[in-house]
Image (cartoon, rainbow, N blue to C red):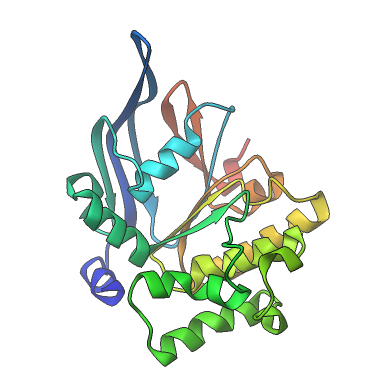
Length: 243
């Protein structure tokens, strides 16, 4: 299915389209608007940073792009597929096949080995062929953990766990990788190493990436920066115009 989606969208410059996207939550008798008519395009193969104050809706926006949550209004289109028109089961299937995730808290499954964690996206997508598994496990070598495949996550440092999470995010050859403060739980030196590794592997794979971050190194490495202010997404600045 991944190759079919890539073929259908070949020649198009935009992978993610957000149109008039709104999200409101009811708090008692009031409604709180988190996103207010967001419009944005994310180019295929771009490395995009998303910034904004705490509570500005950055994680909410990632959840909408991933199809984890549904908007109150508007559309989310990824790879030509309008996620807002899909029922939950189909959104889940699309997410498993085409989106990778890197979280601040790593989110590795403690009862699975490192190798099993990396292979999990393939298992969930029903892709159990030997060639696909070998390609996925090769990412452990890419992140410098080829010798830790049989270890469990609690035997790894925080930086090592995040490197496993990076391998897992890329293992199923996703169209899009979403990262939510991926260096937030790491010290500066470890975070910088993880950032450089994530950036290098995403670029090498030609994958589109959207990262929520306050990390200056991520901002410096990005092609564009989008800023959420009062529920409005400001147009991303090209790298040479970052502020």
